[in-house]
Every structure is written in structure tokens, then in C-alpha cells.
Image (cartoon, rainbow, N blue to C red; front, side, top):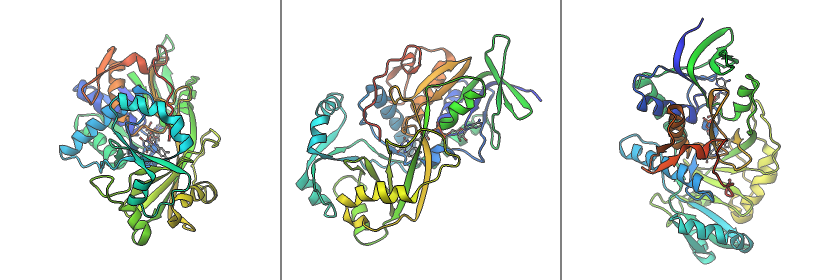
Amino acid sequence: MTEGHQAIIVGAGILGLASAYHLLQNHPGLDLLVVERLAGPGLGDTAKSAAAFRDMFSSPVNRHLSQAAIAFYERLQQESHPLGLKKIGYLWLATAEQMAGWGRALEDLARAGVKFQTLETRDLIFRLPELRPLDLSRGILGVNCGILDPARLTRFYEQEVLRLGGRIRYHSEVTGFTRDAEARINGIRLGIEEILGDAVIIAAGAWTGLTLGLAGLEVPLVPRKRQLFSIPAKEGPLARLLAAPGFNDHNLLPFTILPGEAYLRPALASFILGFANPDQAPGLEEPPRAEADFYKNRIRPQVAQYFPVFQGLAPTRSWAGHYDEHLPDRTPFVERLAGALVIGGSSGSGVMKADSLGRIVVARFAGLESVELGDGVQFRVADLGLQHRAVPREEFVI
Ligand SMILES: Cc1cc2nc3c(=O)[nH]c(=O)nc-3n(C[C@H](O)[C@H](O)[C@H](O)COP(=O)(O)OP(=O)(O)OC[C@H]3O[C@@H](n4cnc5c(N)ncnc54)[C@H](O)[C@@H]3O)c2cc1C
């Protein structure tokens, strides 16, 4: 069966749905179909995310993408769409050697207006009695950083897409593409069903390489497994650490990154512990599994070294997903390939940039040179393409 749509989006993760929302906002009445192989919105890597956000990126491009999206999310929350957005801050605990290496990057951030505080070890111990400072020299507290609830954000976009007349088909896996006489992608295959579209937009996250492979296309993307582990903190010293006063209005420990890059993400009466292991072999694991040994040997020793209250504790829940890494500069791209528009390479920070990326997809769709992002500032669309890319390599990937 063949039916025609003006636009088809493959993938109902946060990037596909943010793109769908902005397409319908900018082109009222557009005949838009989103197809997703899973049972609901954001059940791929969006659901696996730690959903933390920050403006502390070394690359001005990443800073803008994130700051603008967060400005939009904050507005949504103020306008009665609760997103669980809390500016609890990001706290980097750094050794003297790390501080020396970051000097220039921190100066650049300060010049760019990014707000952060430098905390002496004695301030840290005063605020965090559970901390054993060992080799720590300073804490860097990013002020305009925090956490949100990715399920609520995804639902917001999904509901708006439906309200604006878009259609979403779940349980629908794209198994191939159709091409026109000039070999441009002009539709999708779902098993034996073919659906044509004037524009096909691929937002398949870590499966983008696999999906484009169905059309014989290659992209410079690498999926890499990432794991998270939940530790309850309902009472005692862990609950006290979670409710650390003096960092933010929420009396919560900031999202805290240790010198070895393991991190503690505050959650509801619990911590989520993670570590983007640089030695993790690239590749898709289906389904990805969190490994008890990874927690025990690679995460807990890092965390318990500085916070002995974690000694001997085992997680009650764990899960794994993938980063969709764009290795050349660890920054997303939006580009046309064989006629399809591809949005990918979120590189572990797609939730915090989703709204900006959705707007850039719309600008590419409409052939615009620049687009206003959620902070009211223009963004040059070609900068995020692969042809005329103008993106410095990101140094702060967590
Ligand atoms: C452990 C972990 C921690 C993270 N922490 C953070 C964080 O703190 N902050 C942050 O901003 N980001 C974080 N991220 C990254 C963030 O989750 C991703 O950047 C973001 O979710 C990417 O969104 P997406 O829409 O591209 O991918 P997804 O949410 O995976 O959506 C892609 C969708 O495409 C569908 N799909 C794929 N192939 C097909 C096909 N052939 N047919 C139909 N549908 C298809 C998939 O089922 C999926 O639902 C983290 C990721 C992980 C794994």
C-alpha cells in the first residue's frame, strides 16, 4: 500500500519528536508522519538518559545549542508544563593537575559569560561533610546547569505533535527506503508496506548507521554503550549527601563529576551513578545490558574513594543505552544524504540540545540559512552540516 506524506520522520525519540513539533509549528497543516519501531515515545536512548544539562561546553556551538534549548524548556516549565527541570548545578571535583589543564578553557567560559564558581577544598568539606578530599584541589560549580525529566519532555513534544495534526505510528520499523529516478530517498519501507514522502527525516539515534545502511549509506557515527546504576538514598548519610545544602535552591547535591569522570546524578531519594568509559568498545549491543562488574570495578571504587558512604553498596536498578557519537568533533550534525535529512551524533548530550536541533532541522527542511533558536539568537544552519561544517572539537564530554 502506498500513501503520500509531505514529511516522514523515522524515530520518535527526543530528536525526532522535537523536529516534528517545530515542523508543525512552522508549517501549520503539514501532512507529517512519525514512525517508531518501539511501543511509545522516547523509549530508545532518551529513556536511558541521565537527563542532565549544562552550558559548560568548550565549543561555543555546543554552548549555544544547549543554552537555547534550556531557555525554551525553562519557558515551557514556567508556562505550566512541568518538566522536572531543576537548576541544581554541575560540580566538577578536580585535582591540581586537572585545574592546571583546564585554566584556558575556564577563562574562555568566563569570557563567554558562562556562570561558574570556583570552590576551595575547605568550602567543599564544609558543604559536603561526607567528602574525603584526598587529592582534590578545587570544585568548579556550573550554575546554569541541572537535571530534567526526559519522559515529561518527550511527552510534551508527542502531545503537541498530535494536537497540531501530526500522526505517529508506533510498532513500525523502517526496513528499507524507496528512491526516485534520481536515486534520492523518497519514502520508507515497513516490511511489505511502502510509504512515500516529499521529505524523509532520519532521527534514529544510535541506530542511524544501521538505518542508513538499509539505503547503502554510511555516516561518521559510532554507537557506544553507556551504563547507569541506581543507589537508594532514603535515609542516613546517603540521604544527607543527596540533600546537600548551599549549592542550589533545591537543597540537592549538584550533578557531581569526579576526577576519574564517574558521576553522581541526584534522583528521587536515590543517586544514579554513571561513567562514560573511554575504553568501551564501539558498537551496538542489542539489548544493551548494564554489567554488575562494571559498577563494582570501574564506578564504585571511584565514587567510594571520595565518598566512603558508597563503600560496599550495590545498585537496586541498572540499565544501559548507547551514545550516538560523532567522533570528529563530538557535536551533532544535521545534513542531507541522498535526499534524506539526517539528524544524528548527539554524542551523549541530545536531551539538553533537542529543541535547538529540532529548529535546525526545520530550517534545513525549508532551505533557510539561519534560524532563531529558543534563546532568540540566530544560528547559522550550515555550521552544523557535514559539507560546510564550522564546529570546533568538544573537549568536555561526560
Ligand atoms: C546512559 C546515558 C546517559 C545519558 N545522559 C545524558 C544526559 O545527561 N544529558 C543529555 O542531554 N543526554 C544524555 N544522554 C544522551 C541522550 O539520551 C541522547 O542524546 C538522546 O536521547 C538522543 O535522542 P534520539 O532521539 O537521537 O535517540 P533515541 O531516543 O534513541 O530515539 C531514536 C528512535 O529511533 C527509533 N528507531 C531506530 N531505528 C528505527 C527504524 N529503523 N525504524 C523505526 N524506528 C527506529 C528507535 O527505536 C528510537 O526510539 C545519555 C545517553 C545514555 C545512553
